[in-house]
Image 1 (cartoon, helix red, strand yellow):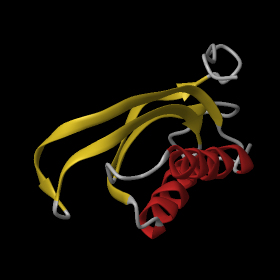
Image 2 (tube, rainbow, N blue to C red):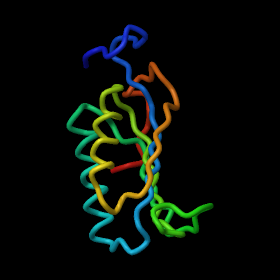
Image 3 (cartoon, helix red, strand yellow):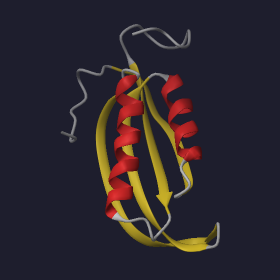
Image 4 (cartoon, helix red, strand yellow):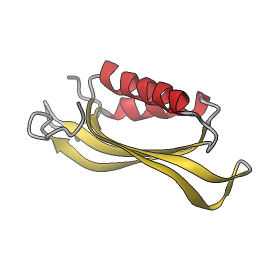
Length: 119
């Protein structure tokens, strides 16, 4: 694992949460394809997925790209800072993704000490 920042301690990762919203007419195969792409981006760059949740179709607080509802997906993962940039670049290119948001939950997390609910 390479250090991306001088603030990062050796052999640690940062913990992130990403929520993205897909168009409500996205079929199950489309959702699975996007999830596979997100998983690939995270894992190919040395990240570890902690939790994935499909919150289903929900009404949004306001209209986004002429949609009032969306399919919400929640990801929690451990990764280096560059992974978030690449993940968001990929989400920007997906036409069915209408909004995404990533926050840093924690830093200097030992990846071996964090249990994964994802298999």
